[in-house]
Image (tube, rainbow, N blue to C red; front, side, top):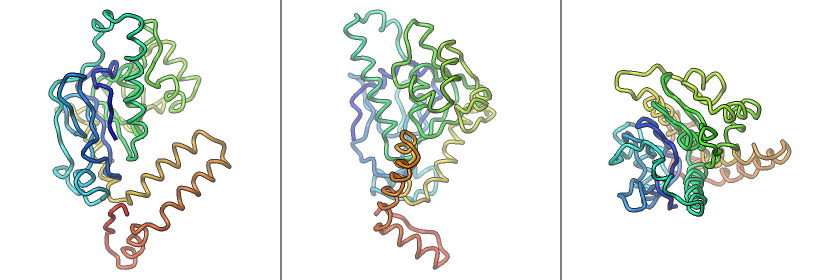
Length: 285
């Protein structure tokens, strides 16, 4: 899959310390990429960028489906060439009304691509995630943050509303009433406050290197990596689709997703590994 919109279009990801981590659960393929700008260099799945980036297992990219990545060194690492400090508001001022709509559509398309990735995704917020930065994090399955991090949907301060999915994903994450309060007030939360309202799953005291959330995201990704790749993919699908429908329909979705795992080689490998009292060697087949 390819993401056509520019990283520069990702609204206000306003810090050098917000990253995305995708566990190695499905083959993204070497063609998966996020352009940094329409004219700039392109950045593939990455970790440890001084900006934000996507981390995927080396094995997922080189061998297809796999769960055999064991160390951080085996995670594919690329670096963003520049820090992404978010939307250039001076550039926005120069846009005429006819340009704004397509620009925001590109933002929305990128964020939707991330939400639809067939792998578990983790947003690690070690600095600021404001506006589009938080919308990007909301598109991830899991969010972790340092206690000193700052996050919020602040668009109403600029007399606009969140345009990258924030009005839809924030209520689904924390409830309608509280989401309205935060959007109407353009309030910025720190990590502890975000944890208290359920916006993030884990909050960490920031370390000297300034990457506490990033390290926690890596720990979580390592917990995901040994599991069956197909199982993780369809589990994500079942949860995402099931949350949008009634319980009876959701259970039918779960049944259909479960059926996808029955004929896999990985399921048989899991049973065999259990019988032989060893770790399974899943290949996503």
